[in-house]
Amino acid sequence: PTLTPIIFYVMGDVPYSAEESKQLTTQLSDIPDDARFIVHVGDIQELSGKNCTENAYAEVSQILRTSPHPTFIVPGDNDILDCPNTNDALGYWKEHFSEFEDNWQHSLPVKRQNQRKE
Image (cartoon, rainbow, N blue to C red; front, side):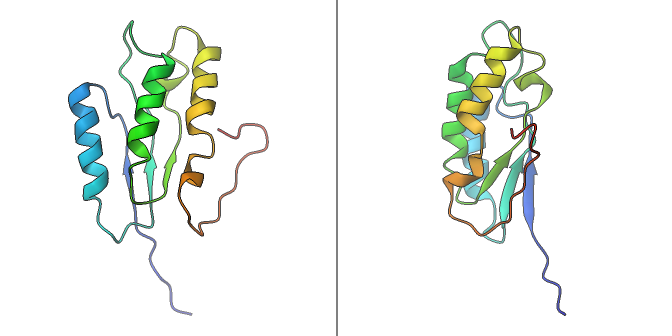
């Protein structure tokens, strides 16, 4: 059988500022058409007293939804564990990123753990 390569792009630790939010939008649109999908490995916010708010999660979700390619995202430590209220942070994460790749039509097989579906 002929093997077909799967090409995907990975990013993380972005955006930490308003400027990086703009850069993320540009980076997403600049990803080559050969991408089957994108994976964001988390840390969507730099920790400070103003982060870990629902607005921070909502803003990044909105930016990532502009991607022309199916996008998967997993939480980084800044996104849940390092937040002052981890229960709130996990709730925000689930609200804005659970099954995030379903925002695109694709035929990628997706499997999740039964216990931790985020």
